[in-house]
Length: 302
Image 1 (spheres, rainbow, N blue to C red):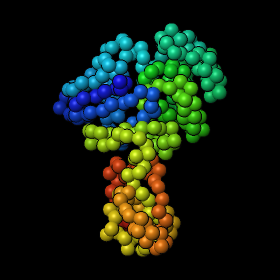
Image 2 (cartoon, helix red, strand yellow):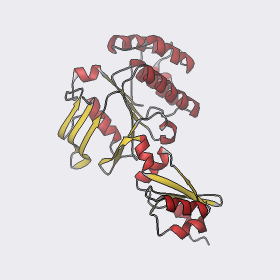
Image 3 (cartoon, helix red, strand yellow):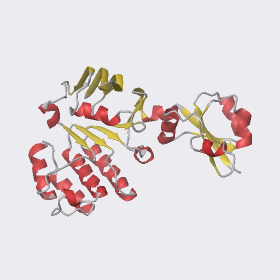
Image 4 (cartoon, rainbow, N blue to C red):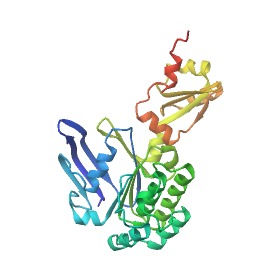
């Protein structure tokens, strides 16, 4: 049975529809990346799954139950974001003791080791931490809780590059040892793509893509070469995304070609390669021109 099921789920705030007619299943023991541009409803979706807010229409189930105000879902789920707040009087050590009371699979020893590694003294209060350190503490709680459903909504806000890398590595290592269903939302697609198994892309109030990260990458292919050479093939391929780096231009196009076409491209001096998940994400989110490069390419300088 899937951990999360949505059937024709819609969420409206007054007269504004945020998410419309979502149909979705999230399978057990997978890490799914929830991606999409700002304002498309990623946080709204996660809060509905967590049971914090109620869907407007349709049916949403988590562990087979309606999650809104469900004590059972709450006890088996953790939602980590940068808005997590704790009582001012409690130290980090006090909080760890309370988490041990609430989360059935809580690993207090792991939490303490991670806090020590990230240089977070147990005697501090949560409110005195910097933004990056608060995010780090919250992320540690999400890992150590080992909830059957673990959701991270932009968990790396304020972290430096080293801390982000360590968080992703710690999450992966603990997931491999203790599998659970993880939803991870982040704008740093290029940093987390090696961690993910599935991708859920929200675009235009609906689901634009939901499948394995490998399938996402296989939807596109990348050409790299001199612009005047690439232009000779402009009529054969719809360019989804275009960038220029020094003397070379890169095109991302739909992965629709024959072996003969690839041979012809290579003979013309064009390098053909697979795309990364982050590049495929750019292509899937409607960057049908060259992105910001086009702003400068079309400007007339006096």
